[in-house]
Image (tube, rainbow, N blue to C red; front, side, top):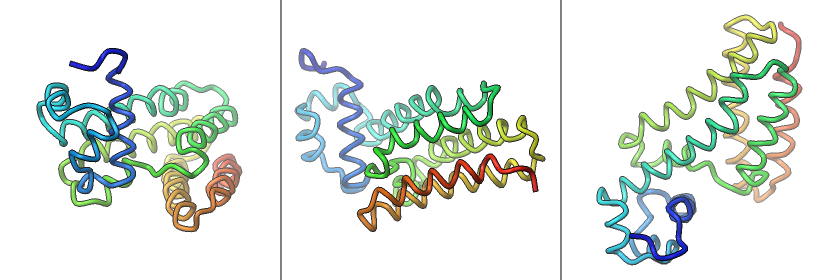
Length: 188
């Protein structure tokens, strides 16, 4: 049971930040209890599956945000330029202009990758598919749309890593700005 005034979504956000800062493997119960303000008993009441359930629910929460704010708008859009601008703005907002690590990408690189492989693959595949569908509607061939969508994910993920490594959020913002032009370029 949660303490009065503490919502499950707040616990998931706190857990997400612990996993971002320390990775799945480094997220100790001590760090988790400090970040959430919940004792061990409360945590295991909420997450009887332990840390694996915590991470699964955090990944599902991230997936829900991306479905609502990125994937569905891309799939449903009539205006590719507006949809891509909204995607770029949403990505910039979610990743705090490059200051926030992609937890899904972090999990994909860590030792827990196999445990969460389906969730990680689904996150990237759905994003790429939604963007490729939009690009197809804008007149690109299937292969061009797939390549540009894949390039978009590579650009975003790479820019997050480089911005973090260089401690320069401007790298992320520039990459997003350049990405818009590449996605909307006329067919080859």
